[in-house]
Image (cartoon, rainbow over all chains, first blue to last red; front, side):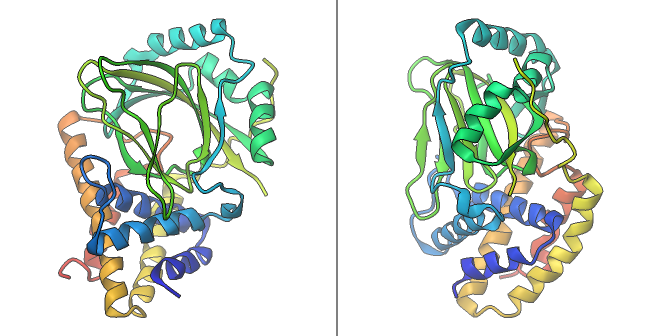
Length: 232
Length: 96
């Protein structure tokens, strides 16, 4: 049994709160082990540590067998997302931007009315449950803003309320090269995802390390994230 | 839009998370005691990288005067962060 398997085995003995803290530890380790360019270490002790960390993250949750290798259960533009609804979400995101609080390297606002309504809507639930099975809305809705050069999120994993994190790209303005959402599947090369405005991705964010690349000069991103979780 | 029944009581509170860290630390200490030298080096790299990364974020946060209130993250309180910063030392990994 190698170290990743032993750590995963430890994980199966943890309480929910211990597992949440262990997951945080592993997420922070992933963030610390990647280079400034977001690339994993290629060789040596750090490469082994990074691989071990990702493998443990991917196997830690009780529902890990439900999780695709890259964590993604859905990507596309939902039928219910009309141009009018997308515009309304953009307008709400802009309206609540002044209340956003900085957290690490990005800005967040929670619980805006329209986003909260969509977070518990049957339209979104039906779409996601068709792809992910038994899920539960957690009624969490966050607007996230990466609208200054250098903002982003290093590799991390999400907590239980966003275990199935569903991200809708509202706007992405850039001058030359866009930054990406980066997924770090265990045992594979990182995947860079470039969401178009109106495009949604739903992924098991508690079981795959993921990051938002630092935005560049002239770049600005606004997203809304809806919280769901798998239920056995 | 139609509503579904959401479950909003799923989030562990800060006290539960903070209370879990001592017992988690004990379990990791027990694991460490059963690792060979190669495994211990990898384990040490994981734990110390996490602490170093948290320290980097702390520095960013201090300069930016951020608030630790973001609902999306498991890193909910400064106490949790502090315990993870101290974990290499608590596990005897900071000198390796």
